Image (cartoon, rainbow, N blue to C red; front, side):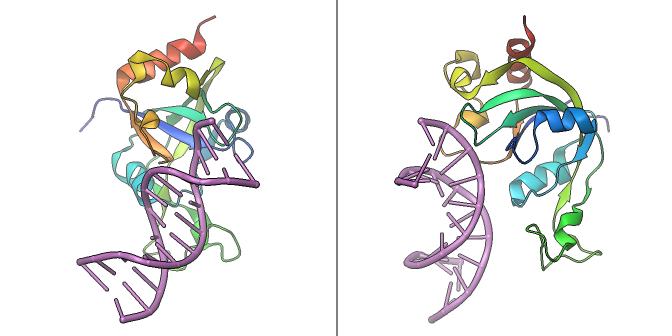
Length: 157
DNA sequence: GCCAACGTTGGC
DNA sequence: GCCAACGTTGGC
């Protein structure tokens, strides 16, 4: 049941977890997602090998800053069991976890961050989920042609 | 720091 | 099951 490769965009605040953190760690669990739609993408849709646009949000110049890759099957987010942590989920049990996540591995950091403002101005990206009004979902599907275009913008000298 | 747009919660 | 109130996200 090998499906075609899929593409995603995942937002992170760089003071929480940045592309440089991922570069250092090589691989990391995507902890702390507490939105059902984002969880469902990780739990039901993502496949090992899918590529990720790594996006920095809540900064002066929001931008896609690099690429990652889905590196695991979904598994329970351990932070939901940490009673004193901010991600604690009282409805969750070990048998029935509420929140699942996948591991993301580092692929590359862009030479040129692709700014949100330049993506908005780019006709080729006019249908991107990210650019839709009111869109704040932290994990979003990305079309292949959008992914390839952003990758070329980010990596060209 | 503001605030629009969403998502979640909880009373009824 | 509705919906008002509240909380959060995230660009500006």
